[in-house]
Image 1 (cartoon, rainbow, N blue to C red):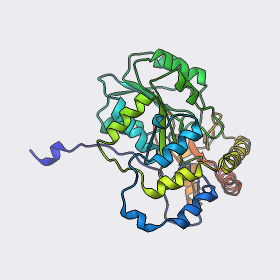
Image 2 (image 1 turned 90 degrees about the vertical axis):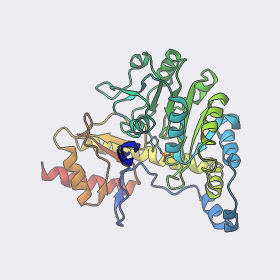
Image 3 (image 1 turned 180 degrees about the horizontal axis):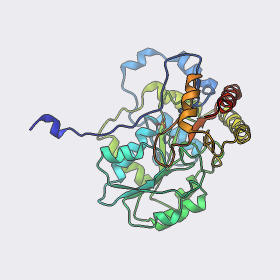
Image 4 (image 1 turned 135 degrees about the horizontal axis):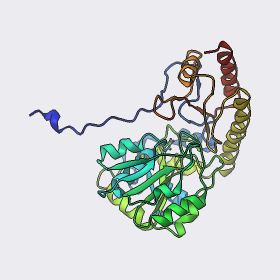
Length: 353
Ligand SMILES: *Cc1c(COP(=O)(O)O)cnc(C)c1O
């Protein structure tokens, strides 16, 4: 017997690299290339550090109220956390608590199986179709809950509200979570379905479309019942997840709808240009409605391209995993960053295998 027999052992999630060197082109973790809304800087400049002495508001009211106003729901329909990773982890802990398998796609956000493992939640992955689509019929089996991102990651594929509703209709006895981390880049949110489905939880984040990955703000919107259950679990673990500064910056950025629209608009435009350029270079990819493109090249090994880009200080994301080991996930950066990527790819492809 050793204390080590009783350790909760897990294989952790591997986040994308955050290289410490400068002058790199960083297209590997779906960060936003533009700064947060200018009003956020004013909050930082005016913050009085004497406030640090006090605990923050455990109900995160200023942020919750701002979100309620922005998304036209009641404040008690909103749960906030330290990035949507924290929110989704809390949601797993709260709602995935049966003997039955929870379901998610085989190709998806690689944190889901990690949370399932750490919380000892049984799960079953559901293969996407050849072209990386979700077949709703696959989700009409007994289950302990359902989660997938829309658009999906790392594929960028957006599914329709009709498809999501079909899954909801077939699963009144499960909590269905839709992870909308990338919905602001041209997708249609399933928030309107909340009116009809008490068991729907929609999760979003400030990390991508609102340029605040470093601030760590995520939120879930659902029925008052779902949110109450999540808060009960949260207040049983850590009441003070959101700090003063985060609450203020988060609430403030929601006021600048114009900036939000223009910066997501720029990314969408750059993405559409990138699709054209990548096609010209011979890459193929499912149509993306996110801030990244999941591309493969019929004549070149993705792992090798990944390495050669890295040697040129251009970072994209690559997984040596079944089904996706010939793909690169390329975050949409500024037009200048994308130009550097295209020039490097031209060189690499010219070198041959
Ligand atoms: C980035 C991402 C998240 C989590 O982002 P946070 O920074 O924790 O808010 C969640 N789901 C998917 C699919 C993501 O890509």
